[in-house]
Image 1: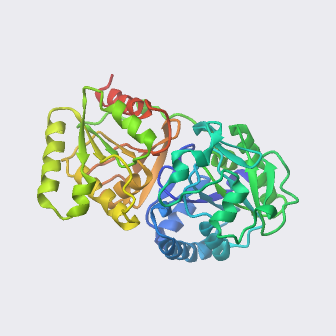
Image 2: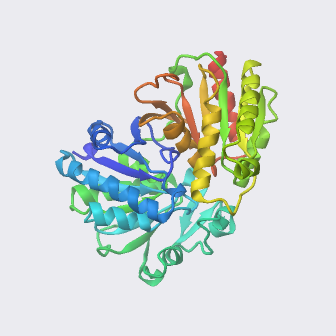
Image 3: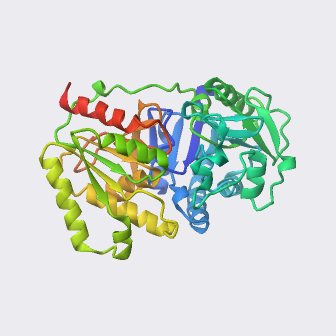
Length: 424
């Protein structure tokens, strides 16, 4: 039956489930965890790979391992399935590498669709051009990313650039989300125009029909919005009233350094009940093992929490061009360990930035599986450990993409959680 479709999502950070609810997220990819995730009755299973923070060779190793474990489990699955790669709606990430690995190890797939539109966040695609709030995305700060920079918003040209010329822009088809997929050539790429959530719902319906009626399994490299139509799950806002209030302070962790994150952090720190603690990146880079640095930061966080205020731990602002991917991950881990040095209980956690969120969840909290409750605000996923964490219990955790929302979004998120914590 159509509603029984299982959709396995390779997600390059923990924030990509930001439009759906009621599904499992895996941070550990043992065969047992994969089997449990596939057995979940929900239509979606997210595999949080954190691949955007990895180097290409690491992506190859990780995806090869996951796909080899997943392949025999899919062969035994008693329901139809699709696999897609959920990536950044501002085009940062390892495309087409992830597609090549998944298709070679889990295929065959028919055609490949590039669908980066995320209308809820102002990301749209028109005539093959990807736009951010109506402007070409390559002109935004995201187009100048240190690791994933690009110079064209024409998605055909972008694929040609990202593939080192192996994919030719002239061969890449451009179609609208409502167009038929029946005539797509096998093995080729198509770029999909979409400007509204309904466009993506239409595309999701077509992808299901192609699989269930025509037997064609297409591969999609997409942003989050496609998942709603594909899984037939409406985007809803989760009410914190469904959760019992918790004791203790909240905690905010900000690792993202894009300009929007800077604006959101600045506005949050105008709140009298919030106190910022800067994690000095350059000082840490000079001596990552410095005990006095860690002790001083830990004492600041503890004093703020003891005063009944919300500690906000944030990395020094601005991009460090010389920092490696491994150093970036180690920095995120050092911040996570500091944040979690606060004594329990904590009422809630807000983690801003994909690498920051992933490291906090997997390496800081040591979680293997999570349950997505829903969206606290559009694009902000509310999660709980599954099963409950041994120390932190069922503490709600919000993962907040670095590039999402407006200047007030982080402040609004914190206000909602504070009102819930205080029962007001």
